[in-house]
Length: 66
Picture (tube, rainbow, N blue to C red):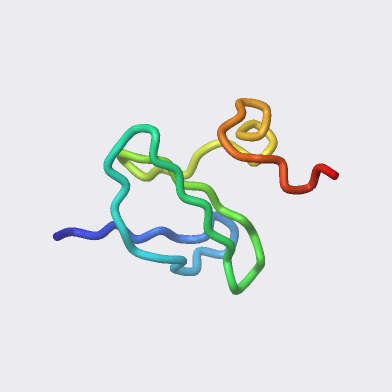
């Protein structure tokens, strides 16, 4: 099984390996090096929109909201 490498979009550090199979799959990973939160989406696991756009679209919850 081929696993795709997911790298931090800020510092390039390897975050994890895996496979996203559906178009609606979403992965959120916090870089242990620079603390940036990175989002990946399937099926190509490309880095996707910024957090604010994802919150507006309702794809992820707003964790900063009281």
